[in-house]
Length: 265
Image (cartoon, rainbow, N blue to C red; front, side, top):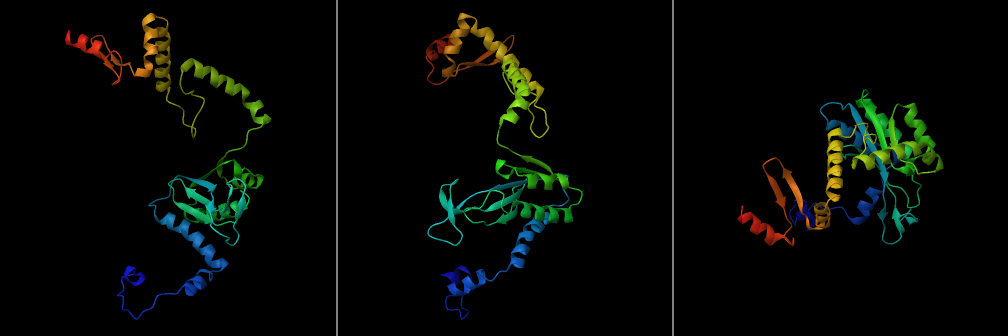
């Protein structure tokens, strides 16, 4: 079956590798060969691009690879609550893998991270010296070594950090202001930005008008009835000086009344 899968006739004189041969081949790699395979990921990624990007964002993260039975360097991990390996990955912003490092099950979050990040950045800048590099990672990678390396090498980093009293104290004025504006506008606040891109102001204005309309309707008898019927999906889709279109849910209790009114128009 294996010979047929490889496109060879079943009676071929060419023998396939046995399990011991495959094991020797798998364990025959040395550190230099493994390092070359790691660098091959970056070189392959560079070749997929026609020109150097202006900005390249790297995403660094770790995960767990469960094991079944005892395997070398597999340990119980208290965070994932299983026996596993904890490989480290670095991806480009398009999802292309630039680094894959297999680590033991009890490895620390930052173990090997700086070494692999340094190699990836070095290989990328060999091909794209003018490309600005950014790094995104979760709080597990918030270590002084990674911070220092990024700042010394001109890498903009977005690394989360666990909340503490210092953060709460310095961010309290901004949080209060954002909460007040959220209550006022009923939508996203302009001060909260994503990747330095302001939130659409027109969307905030629409949210403010919708909130004012809800307050106006709720102050009237008909408005309160409308609020009671919101779960039934009764809402105004379009309102002009000539037309009012209503959409009713299939199980709305006023279906017959609206159908009768429509026929009498």
